[in-house]
Amino acid sequence: MRTPERAKYGAAAFEGLTGSLPQPFPRTMGPNCLKYLQEVIDSGLTSDMVGRFERAFAEALGVKHCIATPGCTPALAILAAAFDFEPGDEIVVSPITDYGTIQGLVRENYIPVFADTEPGTINLSAETIEPCLTERTRAILVVHMTGLIPDMDAINALAAKRGLIVYEDACQAVFGEYKGRPAGTLAEAAGFSFDSEKTLGSDVGGCVVTDDDDLAERMRFVGQSRGAVSVPGFGREHAVPGYAYRMTQSTAAITLAQLEIVREQVARRDRMARLLTDLIAEIPGVTPLPIPDWVTVYSCWMFGLSIDPDAFACTTAEFAEQLAQAGIPGAGMGEYYLIPAACTFLDENARRKLYPYSIPPASRTYSYSADTCPTARNFLKTFIRWSTFCEKYQPEHCKLAARIVAGITSLDLDLRSGGGT
Image (tube, rainbow, N blue to C red; front, side, top):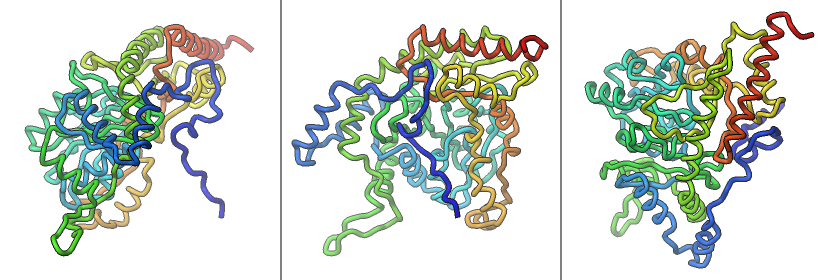
């Protein structure tokens, strides 16, 4: 039996990419990285580097609590565990995202319900969420995909009317801003990613932030202390099934140093993403991801555009391949981001009514496929992204990228009209 090829992450996922534009790796490292790592070593592992990072990140965001984790998936997992909903309870979640968004929901036996996206965008909205709400809905998990933040005021208003918790997957939007407020401070809590390819790129890592004292303590108890309490004369007693999702001191050292340079990098990403968006918008047949007015700082992690399928002779995949060959590294489609289709185990479990899809604890029958979110499905069929967009871009790189897109567009339009050979 042939062993399937495992997915790659971090620098390994970028190996072999070629092109004319900057790539994230090797990453720009904060000047104090070695200093902080040396402190960890010199202390004999007694330094409070994790605490230092947590305090620094909380201060930078203006929140009370930061709980550091070994990655973004564990960050969202301990948050899901800390909410302590019942098996079979529903969490409405963005359909275009990464598996890490829902992993914690699945492990806590909650049921993800995917709201469709707003037409022409990569994110959901209050209007697409509302039809998904039922008596079993307990929370709304909003993803800021590519760094674009949905209309959080409208989503929060809907949630308040229905008595629901809202929390953010801000893994792609670190230090992005919504109406001048930082991503991650727009709801009850938020998870962040510091994986090596992300905007605030460490070796790996993540965190959760919140202003809720009880929620923060619950996350540390369930998510980092393995749900254990100390009983005199006995030792550790595990009151709940918990986790040991703790950031290492070495990761905290690197992440602390990266935090010191990320604000300037995000400001550059914002400027370059807006410039590239304006340039791409001038090219016939292609449409860049729209940047809503409420996104006052676009912490762009991934640049994307849509093609008009009626304007070109080639398919979306062929167009993306031409972009890659012409010099845009990593250009390609992202249909795998449609989680109801990519996570095939969800529909299998729901179809077989495996726990928690058995009735009870579930209250109804569920199904998952690309067709359950048709707007998102259709959007991704014409969407092309390059995940190599980074803070290394200068205006000349944006202009070069636009010329590459325009060149492919002109060539294909010429072929469609009967020109060329």
